[in-house]
Length: 345
Ligand code: HEC
Ligand code: HEC
Ligand code: HEC
Ligand code: HEC
Ligand code: HEC
Ligand code: HEC
Ligand code: HEC
Ligand code: HEC
Ligand code: HEC
Ligand code: HEC
Image (tube, rainbow, N blue to C red; front, side, top):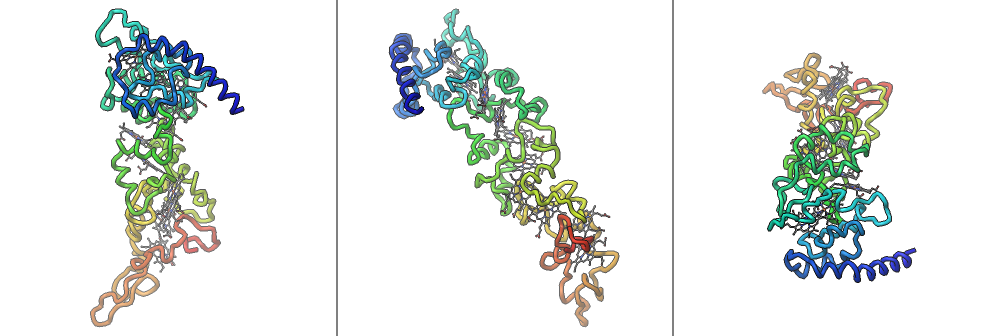
């Protein structure tokens, strides 16, 4: 199988060399001499290997480009045998004025679709409108379930385009690789970058958990472009044991994990917004205030012992020391013990 493929491509290469490369050498525009390293990087792909229908563009845009345009043939957009494979023109438009340059301008007319961002393009032409760029991609990818909510999503409404994240003229599209994806997102999301460096964090920098495990950057029906419809559903995809069902539920847990946790990082382990008892005091009325206040002579389980001479607490309350409320209420996510009504066991 491999041998056959090799022979076929060898054949294509030889045929190509006599036809395409010939014409190429003849009317090659002066796009500057490629440096040695660029030539090396793109040496593995020659214009001759490109799709036939691409010749209209590749006769000028060949391996001598500053950026390795022809690397697209190493990606899923360059699979020759696949009838769905786009041509240059499926993405960049027919671009007749650019190809012909009939009016002989010094700077030729721009192609129909120039990709890139307003800030980020160092190219010869200003990038096309965001809508024009995304429409070119969505002509094929618009029906995928993953992009149903592109329109109206935070990225679309902020004039981002597919090319703000994706690089298609390279075999390694950073945003789709777990190791490199965060780099791409962090360019804009500095706050999440800072959070992910805190003591307690999801292993984002380590490449084990990525932004796209929880978010659909293309937009979603959930809040904050979360993959699932709610925060808890998103968390359950990995922390299934927190779903229960529990005999004794803790209401804030079933409501929204971010009542107590922050998803991106915290200096309070494990990913907590604050420390108990303060965490619990946000909703609960102090350490059993009404029943066993922590004060002089307060007896019982919560109160500390009072020093007889100073009438100050000799021992801190169990509600503050150690794991605070969690000293006793260990089953904070819910309990299945028949006697766990107070999340004790
Ligand atoms: C006759 C040569 C020629 C042909 C054919 C040609 N181009 Fe170009 N193209 C150029 C030149 C030269 C530039 C650089 C613009 C300049 O400096 O004037 C360019 C620029 C571009 C750019 C912008 C690059 C940037 O730096 O922003 C894109 C995209 C592009 N061409 C796509 C295409 C596509 C797609 C086709 C086929 C439909 C095509 N070109 C056909 C010569 C050509
Ligand atoms: C003419 C149709 C067509 C157009 C236009 C098109 N694509 Fe694709 N794209 C495909 C096909 C076909 C695949 C391969 C799908 C597969 O193998 O399941 C693909 C795959 C992809 C993938 C996944 C690649 C992988 O390795 O799994 C990404 C990302 C992608 N396209 C982004 C884009 C972006 C961004 C644009 C616009 C700049 C675009 N596409 C325009 C047809 C198209
Ligand atoms: C904010 C960054 C971002 C933008 C903008 C973006 N993508 Fe993606 N895209 C991603 C990430 C991250 C993945 C990998 C998702 C995963 O592996 O679950 C991805 C994956 C894909 C894939 C392959 C997997 C799949 O979901 O089918 C395609 C196709 C794709 N994107 C197309 C597009 C198109 C078309 C646009 C523009 C309408 C676009 N993307 C805009 C970040 C982005
Ligand atoms: C799947 C859609 C798609 C296809 C097919 C495609 N391009 Fe592109 N092209 C892009 C996007 C998106 C960019 C922006 C840079 C990037 O993503 O790598 C781009 C950038 C370019 C550039 C500018 C490079 C630079 O300096 O930034 C040129 C020139 C170009 N394409 C030419 C071509 C030619 C020639 C072909 C056919 C061999 C082609 N493109 C096929 C989407 C596509
Ligand atoms: C473990 C799941 C998870 C991961 C991984 C994750 N997020 Fe989030 N993200 C959330 C949740 C849940 C929210 C909504 C709650 C909140 O705002 O804290 C959110 C909110 C956001 C927001 C909106 C914040 C706001 O205040 O409006 C941005 C931006 C964001 N995430 C970016 C990222 C980026 C970038 C990454 C990757 C570095 C990432 N997230 C990884 C779960 C996650
Ligand atoms: C080019 C800049 C840019 C890049 C790259 C980028 N984003 Fe965003 N993102 C934005 C902007 C702008 C917003 C909307 C304003 C805001 O909330 O900060 C946004 C909003 C978000 C939100 C909040 C959604 C909401 O509904 O409030 C999430 C989640 C998010 N981005 C995740 C990601 C992820 C994941 C990646 C990488 C795959 C990524 N972003 C890459 C610019 C970017
Ligand atoms: C893609 C899978 C995935 C998703 C989705 C996910 N997590 Fe995690 N989470 C992990 C992994 C992996 C760990 C590390 C587990 C370990 O070290 O045993 C972890 C650890 C944690 C920890 C303990 C952190 C520590 O410092 O020990 C908390 C708390 C947590 N996740 C909360 C959440 C919340 C809240 C959500 C939803 C917003 C969520 N997770 C979504 C995979 C995920
Ligand atoms: C009422 C506050 C609160 C809510 C709401 C909450 N947690 Fe926690 N979570 C905690 C506390 C406190 C700890 C530390 C427990 C300990 O130290 O024994 C913790 C620990 C964790 C851990 C790490 C240890 C373990 O038990 O595995 C994970 C994972 C976790 N929570 C996931 C979740 C998920 C998922 C949700 C939403 C379904 C959620 N939490 C909702 C308070 C909460
Ligand atoms: C976001 C608000 C919130 C936070 C934070 C919170 N709780 Fe709760 N908790 C509730 C609600 C609401 C109930 C249900 C009260 C009811 O049913 O009357 C509850 C119930 C309980 C119960 C069972 C009491 C009963 O009457 O059934 C205990 C015990 C408890 N919480 C302990 C804690 C501890 C310990 C913490 C800190 C780790 C904590 N809670 C954090 C909102 C919260
Ligand atoms: C030394 C063990 C212990 C500590 C520490 C403790 N509790 Fe309790 N808690 C109990 C017991 C036992 C009950 C059962 C009802 C009772 O006896 O008062 C209870 C009941 C509760 C209830 C339900 C009844 C009510 O008073 O509304 C809540 C809510 C509660 N605790 C919250 C907290 C919070 C918040 C903290 C930390 C500030 C905390 N507990 C610390 C043992 C403890």
